[in-house]
Amino acid sequence: MKLRYAMVCSSNQNRSMEAHFLLKKQGFNVSSYGTGSHVKLPGPSIREPNVYEFGTPYKQMFEELHRKDPELYKRNGILPMLKRNLSVKLAPQRWQDNALDGAFDVVITFEEKVFDMVVEDLYNREPILMKPVAVINLEVKDNHEEAAIGGRLTLELCQEIEATESWENSIDEIIAGFERNQRRKIVYTILFY
Image (cartoon, rainbow, N blue to C red; front, side):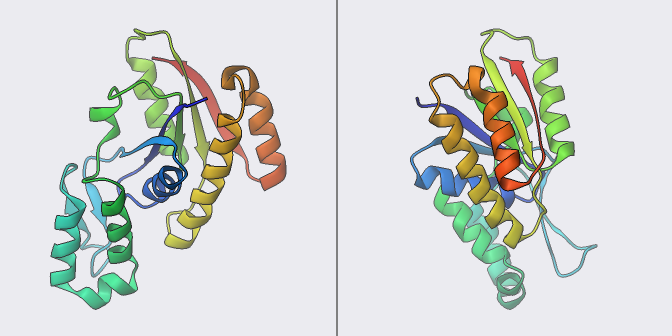
């Protein structure tokens, strides 16, 4: 079965892009999005983030930050993250603007507030296709190490979903087994496009 997957995080493009990178390498049909109003990357201090519009090419972000302070942005992992991101796609996309690019079968978020935003967004859209979509939250801390772990867990979960005849009939068992094996709590719901 070839399902369509969407990875969604807030605005920094780390967790969703790590999962997108791993799934794409394994041949999954996957997209990734942020839900914030801008893309925010750490800056020289907490009060000085680097803020970009969605749609700004990763290459442009990489070049700007490399010019500003290559040592800082290498050390904090932003340049390697942007390098990975530009190998996956041209630029970050915003969920609210692009979610209808195609009806996804599975949407995975990485924090509860993003899960709530995606659920609310889909709930407020008029279902046209009456096609089910599983929205799943796998809580992942927002740092490079946890994003790597979360990406591997996401790949494993998607492989389990992909291996079923009908994810709609198996999702409860898949989630329960994943929670048991990984000792992680997952929140999920089924909505319609």
